Amino acid sequence: MNKLIYLISIIILCSCKQDKRIEADKSRPNIIIIMVDDLGKEWISHYGAEDISTPNIDALAESGVSFNNVYSMPQCTPTRVTLLTGQYPFRHGWVNHWDVPRWGGGAHFDETMNPSIGREMKKAGYSTCIAGKWQIDDFRVEPDALTKNGFDEFCMWTGYESEIEESANRYQDPYIYTKEGSKTYSGEFGPDVFKEFIIDFINTHKEDPMFIYYPMVLTHTPFVNTPIDSASTKEGKHKAMVKYTDMITGEIIQALENDGIRDNTVVIWTTDNGTTGAITGSRNGARVKGGKAKTVEPGISEPFIVSWPGKIKSNRISDALIDFSDIFPTSLDLAGVEPKKEWLMGDKKYTIDGYSFKDVLLKGKDNSHRKWILGMGGGNNAQLTQKGVENQYVFRDRVLRNKRYKLYINSKREPEKFFDLLSDHKESNNLLDSLNTEERKSNFSQLYEVIQTFPKKDSDPKYNPNPSQLWDVKVTGESQLWKK
Image 1 (cartoon, rainbow, N blue to C red):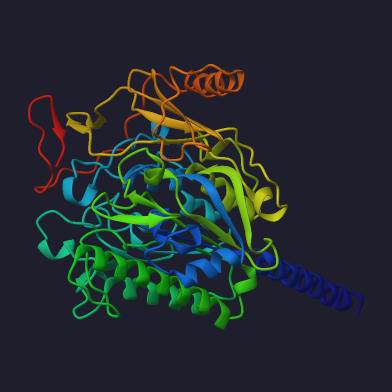
Image 2: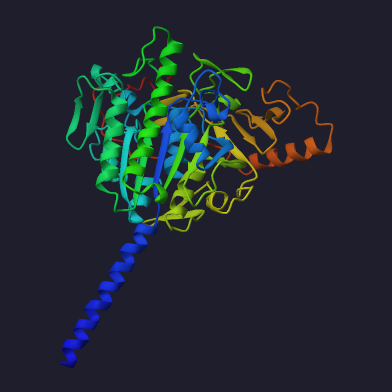
C-alpha cells in the first residue's frame, strides 16, 4: 500500500511539473517579425507620409512604440543577413548584394558558419515559420536550406532562379517553394499566398510559443497592380502595393485577435531599406526621393514599430538608438534566452554586434545600450574569384550616427561628411570643415574613434561552397566584377 501511495504521489508531482512547464511555455510571447521590402518612412502615414494613408500600420504603431532612429543596411542582402545573425556586414561578410539563385557561384548562407536566428528560436522551444523572400540560398541546390536554418514550416518565393523564367514571378502567378517543392500558383497573387500560409500557421500553432519571420515581397519592383487597386503609372502601382501591404498587416493582426493570442504576441514591423529611387513621396511637407542602396537617411533610417498589448506602453514614440543587428539578441531576450556578446554554437564562438533593447520596450527606457548605430553595404560590388564571392573593397564605406550627429566614412577609412541631423535632416550642410564648437568636436571624435575599433579588412561571406551548377556565374580569369 505504501509503495502504491508513493507511485501515485510521484505521478501527481510529475504531472504538476509538466503542467507548470506548459504554463511557462504559454507565458512566453509569440514573436512575429514583419519586414517589408523597399519602403521608406515617406510611405507610412504614421511617420508623416502625405501621399497615402496606412491605417492598419498606424494602428499598430498606436498600440505600441514607434522608433525614429533605427538603421537597416541600404540594400537587401546586407540587411537580411544582419537580421539573421546579429552581426554587421563587415563581420558576416555579406557587405554587398548577392542574388544567390540568379548568380550562384557556390555562394549561400551557410548556417554551419554563421549564427542564425531561426535555429536559435527553434532551440529555445519555439514553433517556427517563415514566408516571403529569402534569396540567400538556391533551393534547387539546397532544398533543406530553411529547415537547416531552424524553420519548421516555410512558403517562399524562390528568388529569380537563373534559367527558370517563371521564377521571376513573385506577384501574379507566383513561383513559390514549400515542402512540396517549387511550382507556379496560377491565378494567385503571391502576397496572398504568403499571408494565408502565415495565418494557417498561427491557427495551427496558437497553443505553442511561435516565432514567425515574414520578409514580405511587397513593395519591391516590378510595379504591379493588386487585387484591390489598379493603376496605369508606376507611382499609382507603387501606391497600390503600399495599400496592400497595409491591408495584409491588418489581416495578420486580426488573425491574432481571432485566436485570442494578440495580448501574448510581440509584433515587430519594419522595412529592409528605403524606397526605390524611381519613386518620390511627400513627408512632413517635404519631397523625399527613395533612398534604396544609399546611406542617406531615407535609405537606411527605417520605420520601426513594436507592439505587445499590455506589456509595451501604447502610443509611444522613442528616439532610442537601434539597428538591425539588435533584432537577433532582442528576440532571444524576449523568448527568455539571455543575450550574450559571444554566442556559442557547437564548438564555435561568434561575436554578436547587436544589443537587446528589451528594456526600452518593457521598461520604457529612453535610451538603448547603444551610443551609435551603423549602416553600410549595398550595390552589387562583389567579385567572383576562384575563392568564391569576395568583396570588391577591403573596407566598405559606412555611416555612424548618434542621436544628433552623423558621420560618413569612405573606403579609405577617412571621414568624408559630418551632419547635424537635428537641424539639417536633409544632410545639406557638411560640417566637416566647421568643427568650431566643443559639442561638434566632441561628437565627431566619439564617432570617429568607433571606426578605429572595426577590423581593417571587411570579411568576405563565410560558407563552404556548394557544388558548381550549369547556371552559375562563371569566373573569368582570376576575378570577375559582377555588376549586373
